[in-house]
Image (cartoon, rainbow, N blue to C red; front, side):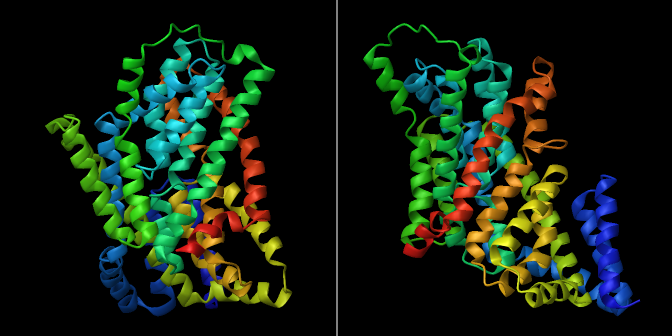
Length: 435
């Protein structure tokens, strides 16, 4: 049996293990170790297992991951997201569908201080969905918008997915983060348009709220309390874009600002610190475990030569780059329906990156496209992770099928967004080029 065949067999075994719900990090590491043993013998396999995990986790750029996670945890646990939602509800609440639109933009704001899709979804599920249900909104619309806008957590910087992609693709992490700004804003605008059109066509989805006039002093007080999230976002994004700080330093800056802002708001209690640190440590450990397994699997595939064989076949066929991108789109949409997005990203990069390189495809542009498709997969059945996160938050109040039905509205918006991003790459590359 030649090495390429061994590589294909290993991929099949890995997919089988994931289908059996074996933790993806463990599955990746186990198959990589067994495959390396088969190809090179026990001593090289033990050497890779001994050295690579440390070499990878000691990567300087990866220190941004726990810092951004800590920033998001502090922002959520100290009430900054709640204040932003209240202010946006005040601005949009009198419009038909206004609370849903407020939820959409509040999600975009929290995404800029979080970096996690599922954390954004869970936060909005606790804060915004009960408010919409209480106001008589359709359960499908209420849960659908909160689930869909969670995907912005992986696009709008700081994005953990973007940082991990940048490390594996060997591109600038700063440019990857900045590249997500315009696609993220475009997606939020498309979602708002979908909400507006939906409630116009079906007014019973979002009844008009006859709210009493709010005194100007109360309005100013509510709006004033929204300053923390813009400060965090501008501090991080502005620092990266201006070149004053690296992405790693921006993570530390964001975490420091989050501590300072929470303290100034007098919401930095011992319980907030404890919960934020626990969320940061547990999430960081999960991400690094998966990423380390993926790195081991990447090295094993390189030993088999499988990625280069596939890239060589594609190069000989002379396939148009657009066809390659569309083909990759189908693969990522299918995988995203069943598997953890970070796991899919790390599993597929060893295979697809040589193909994209051979086709001379911009790695930053295709990185944003890949992350977008993986996030769309978090909304699609049978295993849309964001939908199941939302179900866990709302419990028995809303059936799972209703949440999927609500999310389908926003998948229509994603079709147009992806068409624009693929048809006009400048939307993604414009800001990074200016850096």
